[in-house]
Length: 384
Image: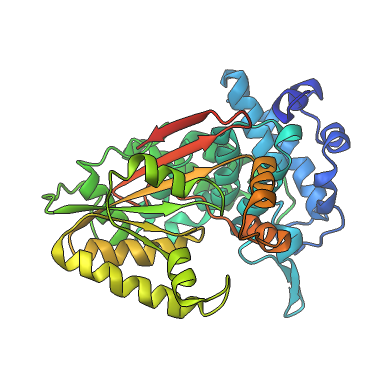
């Protein structure tokens, strides 16, 4: 069975031909845009122009074949979040937060249809993050800390590929001042080169400085902070049935575990009920270990970044090194496990969680670990 990257090349990097093999792209057709910024028409018309501009980039022929395929993939799906976000406001069409939505839409799509898309975990997440960050080169300079979003993006994507995607995005449209867009994007590239992040993450002095940079308001990226952390906390993350309990049994080394599921069972609270009360009870138990400086494991789905960051903030305030451990299993395996589970999760609830999933980024914790399991049950670990 072919995969989408192979199909992209076999289709001659032609969006219309790719759409016939991947009709998921049809949802872009007829989605309105503000003619001030998109005089070319609907979102699909814009996407088609972007994909053509990707092939016209000066750097195109110098890219490796895999880079070409990944860049075209990101271009084809870069506005996949617009259908869900587009609305008429004040007489103008707008698509607020379409990049955030697009990351989730693409991830869920490629996860559920892994057999058709055929993307590795790394390729899926790279495409998702290129979709998420493709607007940064245009507006990064307006921020109080212009380098912050660039360095954050560099944790997940090569800045040189992000630059090329944004350049094609700016050229693949009809707008009033295309020159200003390209000027901002060129400035983005220059600044990325100055920071040394065109092809990889920023080289922070140590993990503690890196963690503090992404969790403070005004820390200079070139700082070197003394690491005064005193103990470790493991923050589990992943969809239900991804294997968190098994990982804890095999690698937890007998450390105390605070499990939200166990608290629900202890108090007879059903899934989705009294969530704030369950979280509050878990936090009080965590504070006992935090005050003692005693390592422990926080076991919950934690699929939303905001939730993870609140917990990281709480734990690190007591001097903990927070290690984020994310687990994932294939979609079909997830459904199979659910059918065999005593506490069955309604499929609609599970599907909603897949749509909401925000995979942890490397900057979120002191360290970040991925445990991925394939359909044959083989596990693969990655650690940063």
